[in-house]
Image (spheres, rainbow, N blue to C red):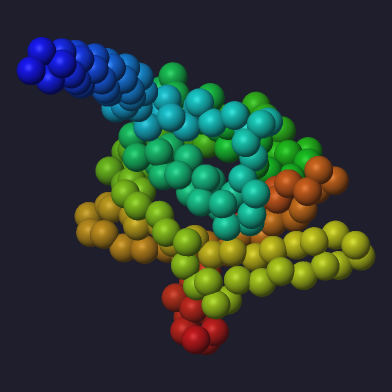
Length: 196
C-alpha cells in the first residue's frame, strides 16, 4: 500500500512540475508577443511607412511598388502634418527611376508637392483609398534589354462627393532588378471604356 502511495505522490509531483513548466512557457510566449503587438498598435500610419527599409526590403514586383506608392500618396493627400510632408516625399522618391529623379530635382519636387497639397487642403479634397485595378490590362515587356511594366491604380478622392481616378504607372527594372517608377498619367474615363 505504501508503494502505491509513493507512486501517487511521485506522479502528482511530476504532474505539478509539468503544469508549472507549461504555464511558465505559456507566460513567456505571451509576454514576448504583447510588446510586438503593442508596438504595432502604437505606431501611426506615418511611422509604419517611415519604418519601411527600402534598402533591405524593396518591393519585389511592379504591383508591390505601385501599392507602396499608393499607400504613401494616400497618406500625403489625406491631411498629413506639415513636418511629415518632406520625409514622405523623400520616401516615395526612393521608388522613382534615376532619370525621373534627374528631371525632378528634390527641392523643386518637394516645393511643388507642398503647393499641391495646400491647394488640395484649401479645396477640402483628399484621397481616402487606393486600389490596384485593371489587372487584365497590366503589361510587361522587354525593350533593348530593359524590362518595363505598366500597372493601374485607382484613387478614391473625396471633395464634395467621392469619385475615383485611375492612373497608369510605368515602371522600369534597374540594374539591381528593382522596379522603379518612370512616370504616370491620368486615364480619362473614355480611355477606360475604350479598353474594355
